[in-house]
Length: 156
Image 1 (tube, rainbow, N blue to C red):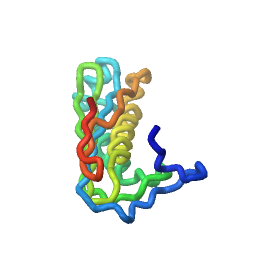
Image 2 (image 1 turned 90 degrees about the vertical axis):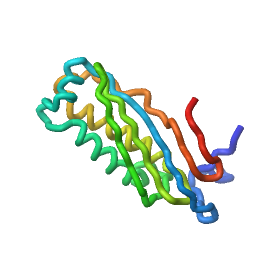
Image 3 (image 1 turned 45 degrees about the vertical axis):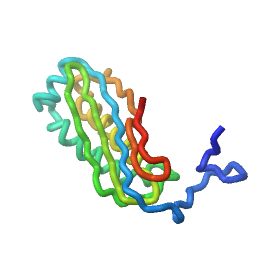
Image 4 (image 1 turned 60 degrees about the vertical axis):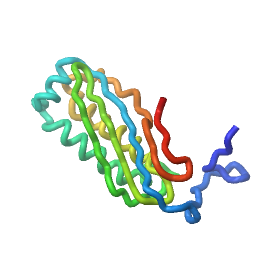
């Protein structure tokens, strides 16, 4: 079984020392989707929700969330992000989110991409819950990462 890197020899949680690691270009992509009624999807697509532009708000929320990941996830390092992109696709009965984060650093940006995707999805829920309170957020996962010692990884 692999050793858990966020636990010390005594089993206590700690922040990993990344000071000796090489600075490399690192990027990560996470995806997720929020399933909803056809009416909610149509209102989002057409921009007719009472709260305003759902997609623009979700995009900005995802970007802001990526930038604040280390404040939300206790053992994450604060990272100077070079890029955060949030792509949103309105489907017949869902909105699919793809979040990509990138940096030049000593540690990866997987958590930043995952946080961005989750907060974008939560924002969509918040903006459209009056239309469909039964929306379901799911399928959030890391789909790709590059950089660092482990190199390129892509979800099967």
